Amino acid sequence: MGRWEPDSRGRLERAALALYGERGFENTTVAEIAARAGLTERTFFRYFADKREVLFWGAAALRELLVGAVASAPETAAPMDVVVAAFETAAAVLQERREGALLRQVVISANAELRERELIKLALLGAALADALRRRGVADPAASLTADTGIAIFRAAFEAWVHETERREFPQLIRDSFNELKAVTSGAAS
Amino acid sequence: MGRWEPDSRGRLERAALALYGERGFENTTVAEIAARAGLTERTFFRYFADKREVLFWGAAALRELLVGAVASAPETAAPMDVVVAAFETAAAVLQERREGALLRQVVISANAELRERELIKLALLGAALADALRRRGVADPAASLTADTGIAIFRAAFEAWVHETERREFPQLIRDSFNELKAVTSGAAS
DNA sequence: TACAGTGATGACAGTAACTGACATCAACCC
DNA sequence: GGGTTGATGTCAGTTACTGTCATCACTGTA
Image (tube, rainbow over the protein chains, first blue to last red):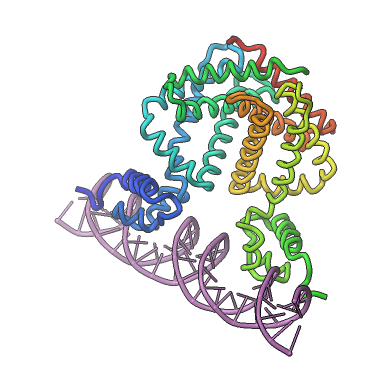
């Protein structure tokens, strides 16, 4: 048996999520999280850069997934198709954890600071996607524009996934969202 | 002559901008800003909700401008065209204050917290635009998708305006960015 | 078996962002 | 003249976050 209970990071993460859910993000102090995890405040900040970061730890994994999907797509595929397909893959993964994703989303949307952090994670995702496209030989500004458009599609689809009652499949919602965007942009004058 | 020097808010704003520019956002304390403006820390927080907000005070005006432009566009115009035209108008206004806009952008891009705030302001802008479109009778998800796409176009154009050497006119860069996006999306398969 | 690292954690003091409560006092109104 | 108002000051408090050093079970090595 070790000197301390194992999995400090996991205990901190679970304690934080539970408290954020129970009493809201702002009304939870780091001292309380640490106490519930049986650790000290100082240790919390050794694992998480700040109080919000607990909720965004998984964003890196999502980014890897998307970048990997873009990198391994067939060479001949058009950039926009590659990005949309990557998001479809990611959507399928997220669909597995619907429960957790929804709780996290409730906590985040209840707080302005957290919404800010969420946006920057999406922006970083966009930048990573644009990079991945450039590595496929897509030039700028097409690369960043395609990536940002992908993010816009994802956001619209996520919104529908969370709030719609009809329960379409998440990957299908991505596809639908893309078609909607094409309808919206192609009709306009130049 | 009043009891205090006039224009406290303006003095605080100028002091903050100057200090952020001189020594960076993180290395500037609110106490220092207040001291330079001849006021107290407490008064700073009466005018600005937090230390970042000094830099984002103007976002509301930009939002009004865009929303107004969307609201007053010809009824028959396609949503995407309305949004792009609104951004062209905004771009023309921003072009008037290029100097200040650039300094502000340098300060913001040097700091992660500020980039977060900037993103949330853009998101709020997107939401306001989507609302304005809905008031024109555009249904969701077309409204939010059109608005978000407009934001993506604006960001790409702003990037070019700041960094490109050729010095195209900002409104023209908006138009170019839109055409680029159309090229990128219309080519792909469905 | 001794013993010098090592690494996760604790202890503790400090900085700075932000808030609440109340005092002050020129200007304004009647 | 006297009451009210509104912008500011004063001050004490909370809490996020950081730097620094101590502790001590575990690990590898002689």
